[in-house]
Amino acid sequence: MNQLVSSLRELKARTGLSLAGLAARTPYSKSSWERYLNGKTLPPREAVEELCRLAGEPVGRYVALWEIAEAEASGRGASEGGTPTVPPPPPPSPSPSPDGTEVTESSHRWGVAALAVLGSVCAVAVGGVAVALLLLPHHSAASSSTPPSSSGVADGSGCREAGCEGRSPMTMRCAGRPDTLVTRRTATGAWLQLRHSSECGTTWARMWGGRIGDRIEFAVPGRAGSGYAAEVGNAVEADTYVYTMMAVTAPGTAVRACFLPAGTDTGKRECFDGRVT
Image (tube, rainbow, N blue to C red; front, top):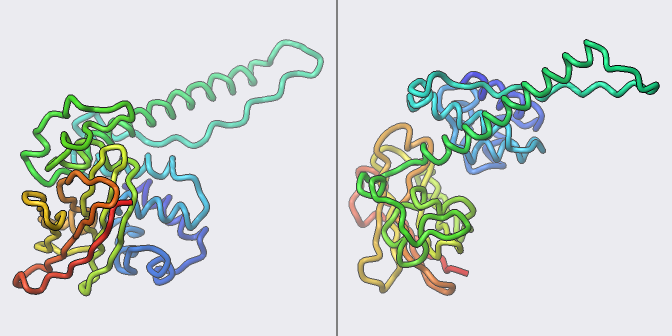
């Protein structure tokens, strides 16, 4: 976590933005950025990507740091024998001797060091992919225990169309490259999105920046049995994401998401509509 926080602070410095400036340029509040940059809360992966975008930096190394920090925070990193570190870039290789003479012992040591660092980078990359696949959030015991559909497709998703109905976009790997249909901020400051995966042929809703007890509902209007809901159950989910299950949607399908703040009656819903393109 410390390594991630230090790297995020460096990125913020490169942007030249204040906390208020970050809040104005991203979907995250000033208080959220304060928590992320002081190590009080693990930021959402998307917040890390947003900061990289503002700083003009590639996301790869920072996402790897985030995956390691998430594994450490969940306790899974300890069970795997400790949390790996992301190594610095390897030093430049020495130029060959212009007269074709034998490489010196010093140059040989540089080559060995570079190979060792390269091996470490590969190990971290493989570990990061494994962490990302294993630690994706689940909001239903039933969905997390359901085996992937046999209708998996070549693009890596675990299901397609009818095989995805009522299943988790994270478990089924449909959330890797989704399209955002609509984004809305609620009166309480929570953010809602309607997301669509053309690979899986499905749509779902997600929420972040909410409070414990906040609820998101998703449905395909006019289709019986297409309603799904998710609720913020703890502080970690309040600072990251909650997702609904997926509904099968073809291009042109109308979809709807509704937000119900904690402690209010059903008449206080905020709803918005979208359409699959």
